[in-house]
Length: 595
Image (cartoon, rainbow, N blue to C red; front, side, top):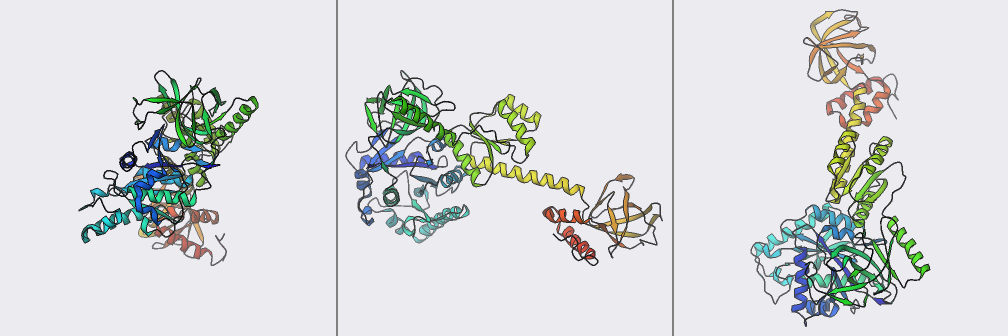
């Protein structure tokens, strides 16, 4: 058993400094040690522990135990989609994440999304609070550490800086997380550590690496144990077309070793791809992997944890985020790996026959898993999970799911497209498809849809029941005494419609609303504040009803129970009238409307 390097992913909102941070770590590493101490592999930068010791200097002396972790592997691939591709069985590929937050801008949509995904995948993280060099009155001494530089600021500048830091702390609190500046953290298992940095000048980077290494040492040592000599396990980071090589896989290996001519079993939408490694490629020393022109060198073998470009035949259709396994080529072993990989992919992809639940789609398997995790946390049932853009087949399935349940018969997509001909069908059939390039926005929009649908359904229900209403019979406005009685009324509170019963102050039903007329116009509903003519069936003015009387809508008991459930759609005054009606009814029947 060996201990591998710590896999670190850097996440956060676009333009908050993720790439600058990685560039500065690389630059700092090279500046603070002999050339070549930091190595580039495909998709990762390898920072050995010796380099970290040199960058951090005396800061590491505060750590009580001996450092046994061999260093860090920072996952370089920029952008958000890459982060959601970083998966292995049972969770995220990353051991720990650095969340970059701009101190001046605070939380942005992708900040929140990153936090949601980290929480769903149970990935611990620390926060690089970036761009402190833009703070008002900021100045620093290169020979001092970040805390000494903060202390040397003037009172006003220090106050302004602390205020901004605590605004960030407050935003974490709003998302259910306790956060504190790294030197004030009492318990790293309960509080998120915030490290103020400038990715531009390098301030705070030694402290960031110190906290990162310290946490990895303390909490991950067991997790980092790997078989260096066993068969390789990895995840596809990106699928690329390379000139002269064809389709290649930028892969992160997190266990074992991989050799040229090894057999590969690669997860796929259908049957796994089985192929042989034709070439393993690493970038030339310190080449920038994100540039197309990077020079590669062939290697015969790579050992975890690292990144490597794999060239092999039959890689068409390979998808980022899919698992990779290697073996020597034994038929039984291949068979076993095929089953293992299928099972792993099946945990995320499910073209099930569930007849209830939402359909989910994403562009990567990691994105799909993140969406699934976040929905599961909210106890939203999932009928199917698949990759790619919305298809006609999806819509026919969606139609039958909607027929079963309008609340869950919805397609939720992350980072996918809806072709224009599909959009037309969606409109035509009245289907609900919600997609967004930010996962938590997809879920937020779905929750809003559910709330609006509930409201619509309740409003329909509300239109069928007898609503709370109190109205006055106007003096001098009796147009007909009986058969039916027609009188002028003023609606004091609430609303009443044709067909509703009418009761007096003692709770006796006196008749029903036969018709309503506002001016010359017949209406079916009379609302608060209106004066209009009401025809009352079964009423004789002077007997059951007199001019000047106050009357109520006679609410049936079952309607009262429904109104109690839907009272958030009633005004305060309507709720008051509802209580008055209940009190009147309970004089004769103490349990009326109870339950």
